[in-house]
Length: 219
Length: 180
Image (tube, rainbow over all chains, first blue to last red; front, side):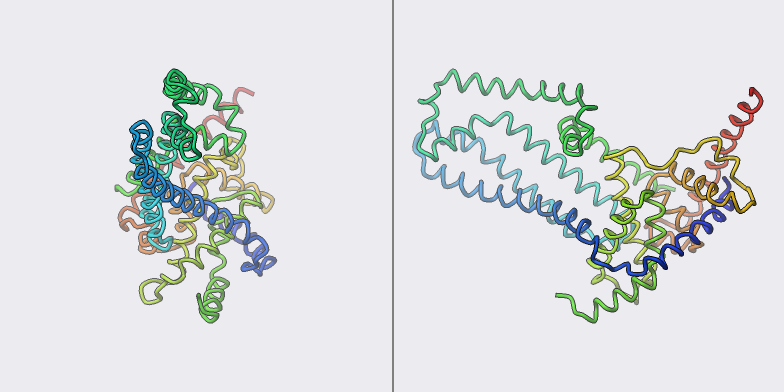
């Protein structure tokens, strides 16, 4: 189809759209505004809540480390501390990036910023998920200690070692399962998001988008 | 809190330029529910960005194109991740409608237009939308954030690509007719 023919078809489509526009004159109606706004607010609320939780976790861990005298409780908390800092810092960075995005700026620049933000989000979520698998034992030790339970005494060192090894082994197993059963998970948006984040497909797609934007910008 | 006057001014401008939203939505969404969602998302974002609109720096239509296209392209990428494209791929039967003059071909021609548009990515779709709307190359460049030369080069490239694809599809159609 030549572009001139496209213009003819476009004008025909516009005549239909103009008719629709007359029928739907009340564009600013609030009737469906809720759904679009809820989607946008939910995305932002997620980043805010993660950042706040990470901040509170940092404060709690700091207090926990300060209160402990036994190394066997301090060491797990010290292992968790830099992870909490990384999650908190990433949350702050996401909020800063999001606040700077002005949709009225040129399209290429905004699309680049959106993909950067998305890439940061995906990397953070991937990191959170993988670190939870590896560090759930230190988390359990710290939480148990907060409620007065000594997990070392209660479960014993072999149990601890076994679960640390299980966490390490779970990472490649889950990745294999995610790739193997991806089609089954793709039926739901939550499943799809989970698979994208586990396997890094989402990050690869984001990198491809950034490359496509760079290609578009070149003459 | 934004003033009542500002809101009224915004809604007036929105009504005067509502065609832009309709056309962007028509370019990036096919099904009715998706179009409604996208239109509302664009309206919501326009209002949020309205504080940055300066009549001295840009026309409202240029500003609105930027907001609408940014929202639509992001929306399109989210949808792409969720679903395969809803647009019908370009098939040889669309060729029979291209260039047809009979009024009955109008709907099929529009369908063929959508099939062609579906082959373009979000950024090229934005370019073609503004070209089909007879926007000046300078305005297209300002909206997209590229040079005018780049706009002209890309439009020529898209013309060439479409011509090649159509020639290929026509050749297929001729083969099918010949063998049947």
